[in-house]
Image (cartoon, rainbow, N blue to C red):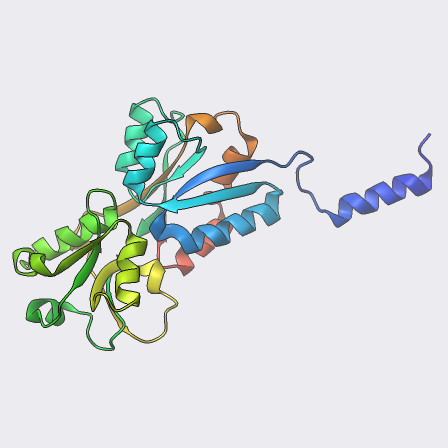
Length: 248
């Protein structure tokens, strides 16, 4: 027979630990490199709210898709585009009906040098290197190429391009001085003091609609489903906005 004192102690423990699920789980999430900082904040807020844990891996969307197609045990895919989650769905690698746009990205031209980043600098060409992400693997790289072509500058600046495997490496080229300028994600520099940046007009490139999807290994994962539900909610939306994205 449970005494009143024991019942009270058990109730106190429940209150102390909040309303987290009795059987908290963990989900493996593949995250596009441009979304690194907001994903970390969202994952922390997700754990605080649900008790579940999201284990995050970061890289280029193209590389992740290849790994997923070859059986990598990711349960959730946060891509930097809509193309690869759609392909995953069509190829039977993802759960139908779970794909949605979680954020719309912003492409910026960034430089550590004040006053350098802008159309005039691109047209003048008085710099040695312009960093971009690999357009074959990263949507931000593809958007950078489209922007240069729209401005009529691609052929002129092609010899100056240095290509990173991901948007993270493209940013690192600029941050370390290996390139004076670089097309990166706004989220990467939104909190960076100093330097200069120019937001590429959206009409210059295909919208960077970043989509998420539940992959087959997460079909029966409560943590994976909860993470995607949390990503659609107001707490995640506030974080997404703060990093310069538009929530989907």
